[in-house]
Length: 318
Image (cartoon, rainbow, N blue to C red; front, top):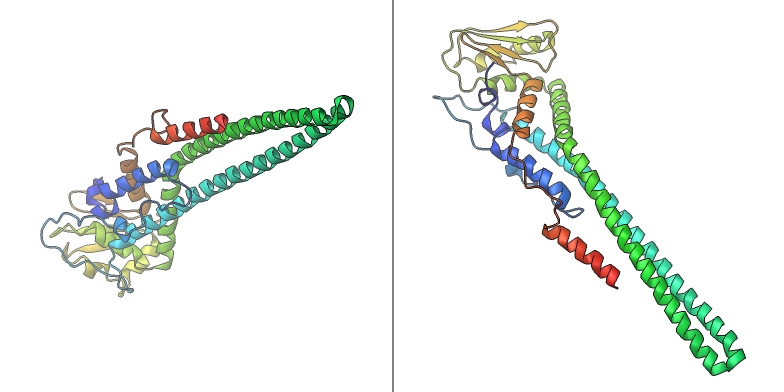
């Protein structure tokens, strides 16, 4: 089988795409809800031009005027953007829960404070009737204030504990989801590309041309595809033989029963290339998994962790 670098153009799986996924992993746990994520710029969908091995034919364009080479990059960009929106929705939901909890606890603390004052005043009034109205009232107010202060401290401690619990729960959820983020993105990309093959009859032609753009002067080329894809490639308007005329003068399309419409095997005199969508996405996924991992998060020495700890201490101190 041919290596990944000879199957897909470099801008479809180069190091910038790998770094993009590493940045997504790091961003999902540290970015505030709603923050702009990586990959928003159009330049993330593009990489450096592929290495050339001699004169190349101009890159074909689809009927819409978009270069054929950009289509796979744009699809992956769309998949990662959708995955990032899912992460942002989870973060926003957790942030709303924290805000609602804070409002509820603050309301309960205020109610307890008012109730403490009322009870203290009533107790002071009762004692004032026994030992003098003035002395009893003063004592009741003091006891009411002490009770209200004690209730406030208890509520603030509960609030601090709740905030810490929510933060820990949020971190666990994001860490669990992070492991599935890559699989989600590639599953979405696979689904989108297969749907593209159903809608755009020239999509497989573009994939084949892209896989062969560095080959020239081959003795013969055999392209094995499904019956449906073979019919499309053999049509006059498909132009696959004409598109590969600089690769070889002897290009044949072979219908292979049992192959999926997204599958494609290209055979040359000295090698066999698997240009199917599933195979290419699997190779990209393996490259992403083998990329260097970002620095570990959730350490007590990290600035974000220190800020949260200081905030919790401030709540307890108040």
